Each structure stands twice: as C-alpha cells, then as structure tokens.
Length: 333
Image 1 (tube, rainbow, N blue to C red):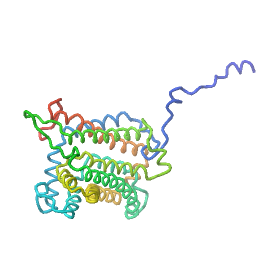
Image 2 (image 1 turned 45 degrees about the vertical axis):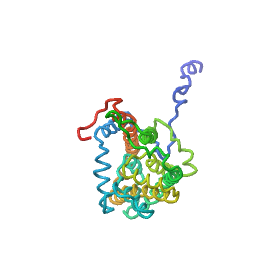
Image 3 (image 1 turned 180 degrees about the vertical axis):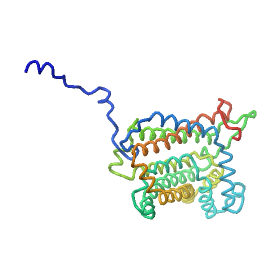
Image 4 (image 1 turned 120 degrees about the horizontal axis):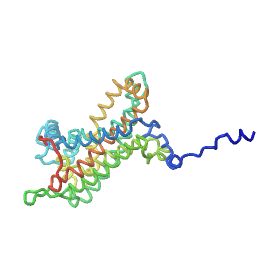
C-alpha cells in the first residue's frame, strides 16, 4: 500500500493562466466556438480593411453614385437646389439616405446578422422571422439619429459640421467638420474591432449581462452604431440637409429628417438581407451550423474589416490630405 501510494501521481493544479483567463461565456457576439485559425482571420480581415482604404474613392461613392441616384430620384440637382420647406426636406432626407446606402458600417452590421437566417423550411417563414431583428435594429438607429437631429436644430450653426474645409497655401487644413468625422468614425471603428475580437473569443462581450435581461440589446446597439454614422458623416448631400435643419431651428423637423435619412440608409440593405434570407437562408444556415466556427469567423471578419477600414481611412489616410504623412492610394482616388 505504501509503494502504491508513493507511485500515485500528485494531484494536478490548474495552470495559473487558465484560472486568470477562463474561456468567454457564449453570447450574441460570441457563439462559444473558437476558430482554429483566429490569427489568420485577424490578418486577412485587417488586410482587407487596409486594401479598402487604398482603393476607396469618396468622390466616386458620394458624388458619382450617391449624387446620381439622388438627382434621379428627386428629378433635379440635389446638391445645388435649395430645400424648399419641411416637406421637401423630409423627401430629400429619405432620398439621400437611399443614395448613401452602401457604407462600411452597414455592410459589417448586416454581415453580423448572417447567423440569424433561421431554420424555417419556407422562404416566407425565414423572412418573417428576420423582420423582428431588423425592426429592433432600425429602432436603435432611428433613436440615435432623431436625438442628433434635435441637437442640430437647437445648436444650429455652432456645430462643427457647419465648418467648411479651408485651404491655406495650397494645402488642405482640417476643419472642425473633418475632426468630428475623425473622432466619431475612429470610435466606431475601435468598437467594431473589439466586437470582432469578441467573436473570436479574444475578448469578453461587454453586452453579455445586459443581453441576459434584454435579449434585443445587441440589435439595438448595432442599430445605434448605424445611427451614429450621421454624427460624423461628411457626405455632401447630408451636409446640405444638416445646414437646412440647423438653420430652421425646428426640433421636430430635425428629428424626423435625420430619422428618415437613416431609414433610407437602411432600406435597401434591409430588403437585400430579406431576399438573401428568403432565397439562400436555409442553405446558408445549414452551412453555418455544420461547423459553428464558420459563424464566428464570418462575424469577426465583417467587424474587423470594417473597423480597420474606419480607423485607417478616417484617422490615418485623412492625414495625408493635409500633407502630414504619406499614405498609399490607388491612381483613381
């Protein structure tokens, strides 16, 4: 008995690092399945985000695409025509929101909704199930936009968005409008990077406890990110609406106009999402559930790519416009 006792192995104590860093608890942003190649997901996503900053042309997206769409829907040059009254302003808000649909934030958020495609055997059932999260997402976005519209109407021309870019000695100087965009999009970008790391199991979900009590909290939060896009948005047509709301000092007009622009911004993406859910939802859901790490990788890639793009584009590449640094850009930019 003594020899057997001597040969018995000593009880193992947990490794200190494992005690200090237990695996994250599954939540909305982390499904409990850690991809085997997390570093590869981060590297590829960061590279995609960086590549987008190199090829992204704001002039093409805002004026060629956004301006053309808005001019066609309104039937007149949107940027040059004054907004004549509240009704015209609300129509302008909805149309320009549609014209500015495809943004990095929208793409990332709707990419994160892919795991919610549902298991219904019918396209109608899947689309119906997707309407609720879309509605909650829209509510979060509209709430933030409406509040900002009230602030704009109250503060008026004192807002940084009222400041135009100035050029001194042939060089562009950062205005209050651009600085506000840098701060807002930089913060949103960092939030998205963090959510991407949460999806990979590197960080804990900050909304996990809140989600236990309020299951819709993540959707409201992602909607708020989209609504926050307006706070720093440099889209020329949005500035046209911004100035009109600020000069009106009408808080109801400001709230409804900004809310409508966000609704327009979500409209096409929402319809496309419903179509994808209806047509490909069953197959996509089966593909994701067959290997749950695919879902976490997809969500992480969407957030990380968009987050890296925002941080680099608005806080690094923008500095090259004022000749503070050099940043690689495509010839057509």
